[in-house]
Length: 114
Length: 109
Image (cartoon, rainbow over all chains, first blue to last red; front, side, top):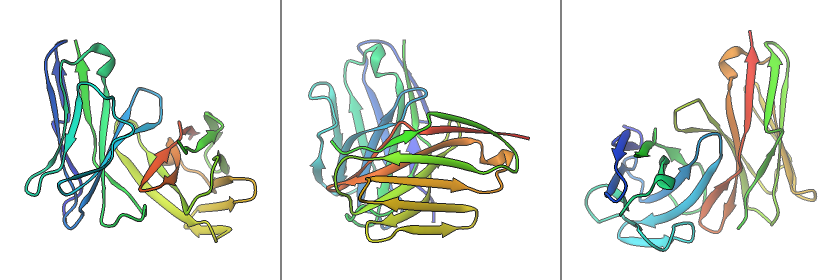
């Protein structure tokens, strides 16, 4: 049973370009969470999704950021018109239930904006 | 929003010593979890303690929870160099978990 898979692991973008980060949850998990981590800091919650639904996006910037978790395929975190401040590690986690038990994390996608 | 805060921010000890990390939070919780993160890697779940539990053990790990003080501690006994990592507490916030800034533990061989 493969773990949470994130790709790409590393992504370099120039200012103004778009970044798409993908997350395939563990098999049987229908709950996906995205977090952002700056160097030497903790994880900041961005968005919580279930299949085809955004449950809580209170941690996501209102502009340029969007997330989806379609019926088929991975969850995608999309950042439009990236700026240098978007440079960070973005982690995806999944869980089988919604009762905030153990989260299973991917290895992260590291975005660098030049 | 609810979020745990770890203390100390950094801790350096010798192999064989015990390491204690603390976590404080602000509002009521259903459970509190501790995670570990090696440099450049994802987080790995260590232990979950529910709000009606006071202490829990897992191998060399011991977690306590004091809901009256809104605090938790993680004790790693007989530390090893391989325990070097960042440790985060996470508290439930409605449907998701919120993390603190972490304690960076260095265990010197």
